Length: 236
Picture 1 (cartoon, rainbow, N blue to C red):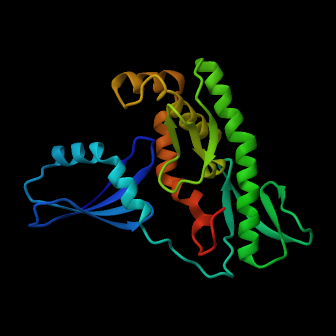
Picture 2: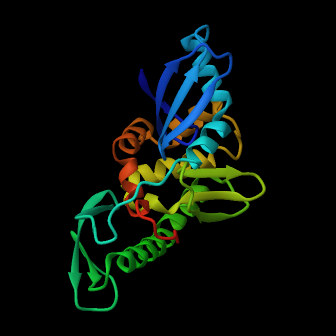
Picture 3: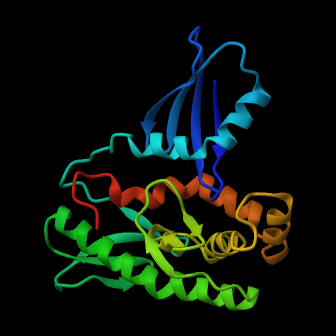
């Protein structure tokens, strides 16, 4: 049996469920967004959903141990998502990356170096676009995080902590604005509501009409935002 489970930040993971005679719940990572879960036969659906909600940290830790998929060092993807639209990757004779929608032009160097430059380029654009957007929503909601920064996390889109502030995954630069706005507001609402109570979701839904659509977009396209991670090269 397979089903999708949504983590607190809206990240969807695939659960492959199996029943076993063992008394303990056993988790194994299948990929960076899927887990195999072996559960005792007496655990019913309601108990399982409760366990998943209460053990999100264990789910994230399991995902972090997943082996990274590899592709050929010479394999450049045909396109990537940027600001919610597909951009075709092409080559030009200049030393720097040039953005000419719907194209992103890369220097004529081997793909591993191109990929490193592209990750740097997208991270810079994320700092220019995501963080001001987060600051804008913070002012609108009259909320002040301890800090605002980007994250290179593999298992969440955003995180909010009282001491360290809010961090947004730089890969969200590939998402459309309504998804970015949802993640910003979601994390900001954790300042007055650190849990996922009814009050928290009421506040989120009050400030963005796009909660459902944003979750659906991330469910459908979220894995594509990690396209540049699918090599053996060192992460930025």
